[in-house]
Length: 373
Image 1 (tube, rainbow, N blue to C red):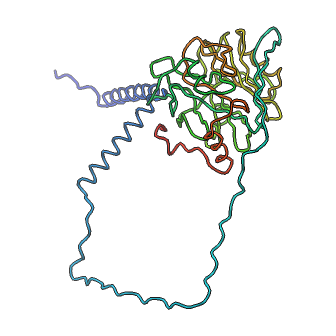
Image 2 (image 1 turned 90 degrees about the horizontal axis):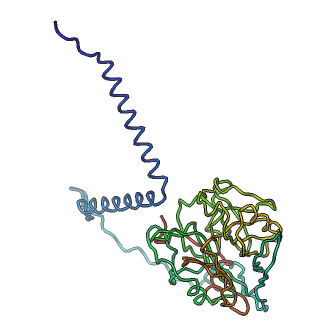
Image 3 (image 1 turned 120 degrees about the horizontal axis):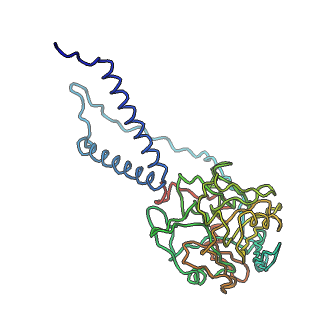
């Protein structure tokens, strides 16, 4: 007796089930792969290279050529057009270009940046007051080994001893900046603008909190995942770090929602923070001299009058120098620092001019940066 063949419906069901499992597994693998910024960066770089090769291949087999006239089609002869007669009537006056009002550097004498050691609730710290109304006070970012752009997933210039960074900046205040990787690449985390130019840019940046200085030294603090993405092109100075400590005058802590998972950030450790009061005319830079939690750090920033504040890099990166003298020495090399200039330690001319150009309409553009993705 002949054996009966399996029903065709069962085979179809098995094939569909197998295909569903394959597609589901592939989707999970791709989602995990593209959740890593470096993998996304490599993928789009590869796609860009393939596109360029396709364009080159197309140009090879379709070279530019001047088209021949169609058969039996007369070629039109060009005749010189008559020259206009010259008259003695007065020519209209050219329109005068509309000039935007220019902002000039003030001739007023500035004051030195103030730094004081304080204690609140048993916590000792240095508080640096950065007066943004002072005509000779400027803030910028210094990079390790005199790099033009910050370490990222494509290029790196490594790190450098804090003392070298302090000596090169020749600023009134030099302190640690934002987080960076612990691997050999030491990529800086978060987008950065210094002197009206991008020194780190990635369209994928979507975590942490950003401090930005806009036209007229207007301050803003934005948390990407809970508010909106910052518009870095509107910043003359911009630094992304976090987590957020104070928002609208109240303690505001949600590090996990900002993308922070490192136990060194979430636990008790050496801290540094930056914020500003309700007047928004000053920045308060605070370097803590005792280890503390994020909650305690936020409470101290609120107590000194901050309506907005965020955490900066800390731990072994914690460093502070005043007038070239190191007050707090980091336990490791750094990739980036914040530098503040005043009347006694004047800013470089290029930094002053960049501020002036920014006030008159210049804006940073990631489109012209070879490190953007």
